[in-house]
Image (tube, one colour):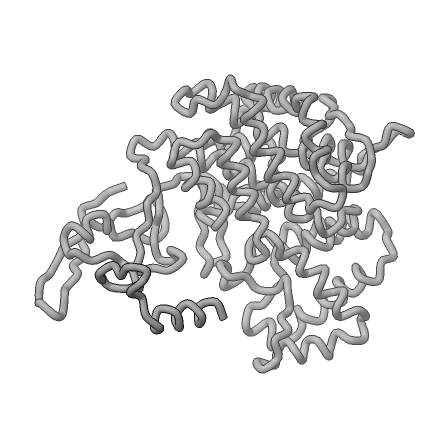
Length: 444
């Protein structure tokens, strides 16, 4: 990064001008270095939700929403999802380059042989009600990993950071599968070292001790792609949560648990579930025109879920890749599900409707992932768990990058204070009716 440019800020009230360095990234927009803003001007910047603020330097993921571009370490998501396995992408995110054959073999071995979890963890599950939400269980059991793996909690030790990263990527599928099994009352299924990452997860999720289970290769391929497409997405809410937690020197298991909690929010990780709920509301293909008309009516609160994207203003680059997998899975499984037929008809009609085409409201990754996961047999309550499983690789990579940054400091955002000005303390027996009225209004 170079910082030869400057940005001048002028206070219209006083006429004073202040210069701030402009830092150039390797690709994409430059940033104004505002670290000395308060020191220079006695003012803070105001940026609710930090949508115009770069909170950190990162070499992992780049997004250009206007162009519909997503890259990991310089590689397009289309190339990675079409040509690499999830384990290759995990290596890329962690270490910066795609692995050689030897490196991939060694990394795959390390991940594979960390997939088992401590046997006592199964007793931890019994503390949850059977109807507990899977994400509530995941928050608990992932955070609890720090109670079992004391040998990898020193974040200042490179070797311990490495083993923690491997353990988290390896054990999340096992914990996710255990969470599902617990919710439906079936016995836990141990991981198998002869299966790929996606195959192993599907086996642990859907196999039962009573009979052999053969992993469908088409489903495994789609699952692997879903993992790749959700592996990282720059400084989103959950990734920022992981970084903020990690900046306090918290252990990596606690940081990932914090990321899972953030992802659980309906505005973040629940979009593909909302797609299925919307389809259930539409109910039948004959009602599609009615709901499309409602989506176009600005006075109607109905929204077409799974179309358009907050970040991608042109198209979601992940959607085209997953669309292919979606149709492959539906064709291979041959499922006669009215809801899935409805989804395909909705996609077809919306892609031909001038209103949606002109506004670039194309199906996004959530639209297709929701359909695939339902076709495979996952309940909607597990959708966000699968998102967390995939995103753990990105979270761990972002956490590792932050901890290894010599400029890392604990996160400490500032605020625009809007409360009372300094006032004298009033003794209890001197406080009048105005204080009581304020209290009653607050209670109301």
